[in-house]
Image (cartoon, rainbow, N blue to C red; front, side, top):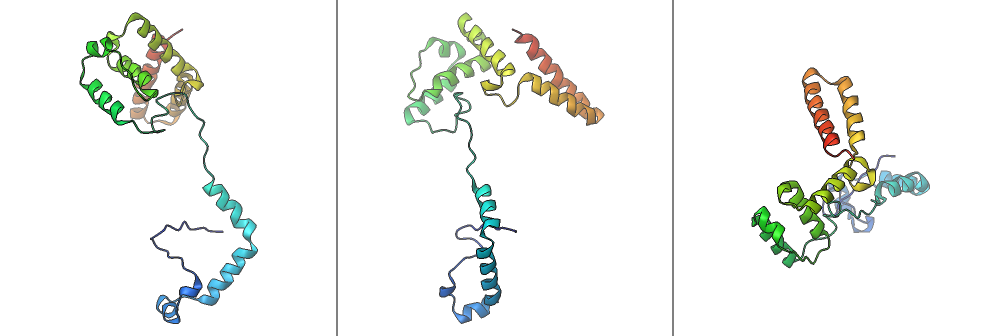
Amino acid sequence: MPLKLVHVNRCPVLAPLKVLRQTDVQRLGLDLDGCQSRAAALRENRQGWSDKLEEIYREEGFAASEDPEQQLYDGFLGERDRRLCERIRSLSPAELARQTWVFDDSRLAELLFRYRARNFPEALSEQEQLRWHRFCQCRLSEPGWGAPNTLAQFEQEMQQFLASATAEQQELLQQWLHHGQCLRTRYAT
């Protein structure tokens, strides 16, 4: 049974039959007998379409994540945190490392660390470098660490793509595979 999503204030328009005047029925070219028979068929076959509607509109449940990068859209930043973030973007790597940052939003401390690690790794302390190295190892090898794929899954998919790729695509895929191998070497346990 075909279904149509109806939006408020857009076509098609739905209205109770009692609001239609005979002139409206004629002007719109409505077949009231046909509408009534389709409504009766829908009532008789409620099970056939109600399950489909329920499936279509079922809320997709996403597993809650503890990873602040996965929580980016869980809520907006307060004004104070937003001003701090603007200030952070204007500072040098050394200034970022020297200052202690206190945020209202608990996600931001970890996000700041990752920002510094990705963009200014040379400004990390030895302890921070070890922490970042461990994070990258886990992110690349353990599914529960927030990446959409592990490195092993990535390499497997690249091999599958290679089988049906053109020569130009194969060259690009080989470059991606090489990058993956470099990551594997760099973050080997």
